[in-house]
Each structure stands twice: as structure tokens, then as C-alpha cells.
Image (tube, rainbow, N blue to C red; front, top):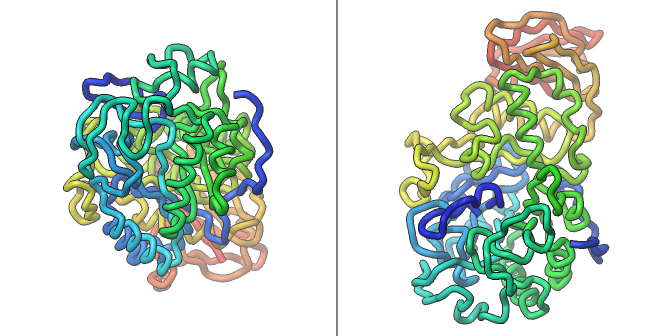
Length: 458
């Protein structure tokens, strides 16, 4: 949950310094392994995630699935209740400890590793009884944290230009943990280590911007085997805390990327995507995404509601060598606070879930991303406005047409001579002769549909 999405009232809404120490473990440039694409199944029940790993994510070639927080949280139907923990027990609406462990086992069997969204900056506001039966009041969460474990700045963050305000005061009134305390660090590290004991492979650290990079690194350093980490640090012009401070810990979510894609696909022009990496984190540290649950609600990125433009942005992300792609898959909504349909029992046939991760254009491009890994981007072409194409040296070729008319021209693909399937439209094993022929010189005459794409790979 981002600080920007957290502009809400305690009565009912929540959306979510110094020098960085050198870690005793190397930061991961991308998730380890040959399959670097993550699918975030936002607010999916853990047993539904297990099914998705078996039926879709594994066969499509996803390397990781990111799941929503595994903590006991405040009661309520809104999505953001998951981001107000009251204990570190796995006892939330998405499933208990047994279902979580079974999910990890199923995903591993399908060749998919698990990233757990970890809320460690704060605890819940208010008072009440959590989803697992724990009674709590603000600053007192029995068995987990008490008053002395929280920062003494007990007022809302007011100035994002002040590092101390951002990292010591409260995000929308949420009890802000003193992550500089050794006792607090030890408790958090024990929680994360427990998830590792259940097979979790890595973590997405929620609201990392609101903890100093030194504190986050110290928590990670207390774990004997911390796994892969990615931190949520939203860039803000002129703000005191910047994403670059966290790159020694692991990957960092690159929020500027989604904004750049929105501008390009909504009239800014696709040629500007040639310099997509400019002004952002180094590609070896950036986790890229078209949207996430915060940005789809605050309007800063494209969303599933943008139709073809949204699909094409995902195609571009998965074709480009910049960063480590994360495909967001949530649910449809009209009320921004609405929680997951049917309590998180996701069903891709119901129409209530976007299931972006399972669309052919996306699964085909996950295979493309895996096939072209390590290949240089070459032979860029664009029409100056709504279409682009490029090769991934000898391994793949993609053309994206965001215009209203089909595009027909001869491209340099760099591919070996042969017939190739457009994986945006069909899986290779179901192409049935409807392929693209590449000549001996690596060229191919291709028709790219309006608001469509063509992607070929070895």
C-alpha cells in the first residue's frame, strides 16, 4: 500500500534515512532463476492461488506469484483491511496457516516461487477484534507489540520533504513501528523467517519508504536466509526519501514506469518508449509494472478499464529488456474501497476478476520474455506516433500498433528463417499454419492489427 494511496480517514479508509548500509548478502538484480516474470494475484484466497499456479502460472512460465498479506488483520470487507495487521498469525480472510502452506507447496510443484506481501511498517489503527480473534487497541497488540515498540511521533505525516516526518510519523493514523528498535527488528525478522519456513521464496515490503533503508536492511540482516526482496518506494519529485536508497536491499518497485506507459499509450506517443529507462532506476534494480492496486485506484496508470491500450502496455513490458516485469491481476470494481468478490475466492469465469495473468496476449508474452532473456534490444522502428517494433537479437521480434488502422510493412526481425506463431494471438501449439514467415535475410512482411500486436520468438 503506497503513501499516496493512503490519503484517507481513520473512520473508514486506508490505502496504505540516512545512508544505506552495505548488506552482508548480495542484492538480487532480478528474481533469481531463468523465469523472472511475477504475477500478482491481488486479494486472491490462498487456495485459489494454488489452483492458478497449477493450471495457469506454471504452464505459462511465470517464475513468481505475489500473494496478499498473510497476517491477522482488522475486520471489514474493504480491500485495505488486509493492510492493517493486528498480529503476525496467518489468520486473515484469504486463508489460514494450513491453506497458505498448501498453496506454497502447490506453486512450487508447478515451478512457481512465492513472494509474500509483508506489512511491517505499521500495525492497525483503532481498536477491536482481529480476523483471528485477537483483541487489540492502538499501540497494544497482545503477543506482538506494545506501546514502547512504536515511534513517539503520534501524528499523521504532514511533510514529505522531511525525512523524519515520513519515516517516524504515522501513515494515515496507523501505529508506526519503531523499526530502529532491536526488539522490533527481531520480532519482524522472526515473522518473515516463519514464512520462509513455510517455503516462501521472497518478500514485497509494503510501505518501505516509511522505514529508513538502514532499518529495512537491518531486519533483513537478522534473517539467516532472507530470500528475494523487493521494496515499495514510490518516487516523488523533491521528496526526502528516494527509491535509489533501497537498491542494496533488493529490487525496488519502479512507479515511474507505469506512469510513462500511461502517457505513451494515451496520446504521448509510442516512440518515447525507446528511452523508457531514462530517469528511472537502473534496470538491474527495477521491478516494472503497468499498474497495481494503488495506481489503478488513484488514476496514475493504465488499468484493465483501458482495454486494448492496457493489454498492449503489458505486451510492451514483457517484450522489453528493462527491469523485472510484474503482471497485476485483480478484480473489477466501481467502489475504490470494495474488497475482493466472494471474499477472495477468485473465479476467472465469473467476470468479477480481471485475470490479466491468464489472457493469451499476456501468457504468450511471458513465454516470449523467457525465450529472449539476455538478448539485446535491436532494430528499433516506430512511425513517429502510434506504432513501434523491435527485435531481441536473434531470439524474438515484437510489433505494437496502438493506432486505429492496421499496419502492414516489412520488418527486420533478426530471427532465423522459418515460420513463427504470433504468441499474442495463439499458443505455438495451436497456431495451425497461421504463422509468419521469416526470410533468409531475417525480414518478414507482417500485418499488425489495429490496437494489436505481433510477437514472434524462437
